[in-house]
Length: 256
Picture 1 (cartoon, rainbow, N blue to C red):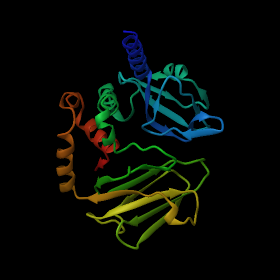
Picture 2: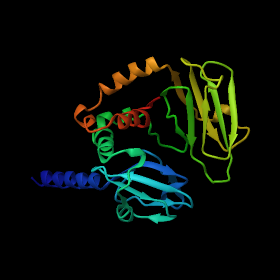
Picture 3: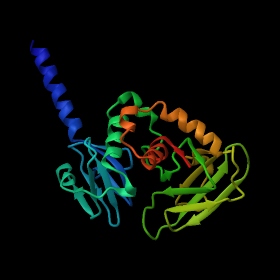
Picture 4: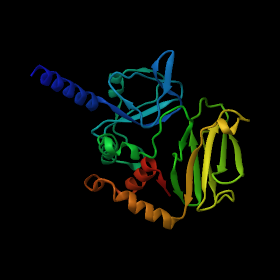
């Protein structure tokens, strides 16, 4: 009986812990967590529990969501406890997205552990790359690349190579994104790898590359139908067409 009682307390504590957690939807600039001598970067997909403190460096911002689909944003430098983040609730949803969209993200991707491995737009670690996510499928004539930037004045070096070939495209940027329109380097049907580094002449063998396949619109339609068939139909009913397209791209790596 005593073991049952202790188990029940642990279960309730775990449930309350999950209820209070926040899912990191978006960060810009440098956002850190952890002890002073062992800090790690907070990135999309991180789960902020009630014990986590985050540090926003100058020109950084953080957007997180709760289980109810509520948004919490902050863009002021400083150290934030979980309670402080919960006071930063906002009514403004980005990109014309609704509370239903963010409820879906929490319920489908965080509330169901069996589906957590499907998240295509989420990664953890110290890589600078943000978009396209690893193993993405991208359709369309416009290809955009986004990455983390350590400082506004810092230069980033973008390397793109064919997964099966010798060609390598190298570009320098003092921003955090680049877009290509019908660039001759890219061909539909081919798989590419990309990485960003602050080094101008790195050893490419030591870089972590993300891969993506440049697909046709017909391939996109087939993959879209297959992915949607695996999603929760009841939750999907509350999403607009735009929200569904955003979900497929940002969370499952299927973009057009």
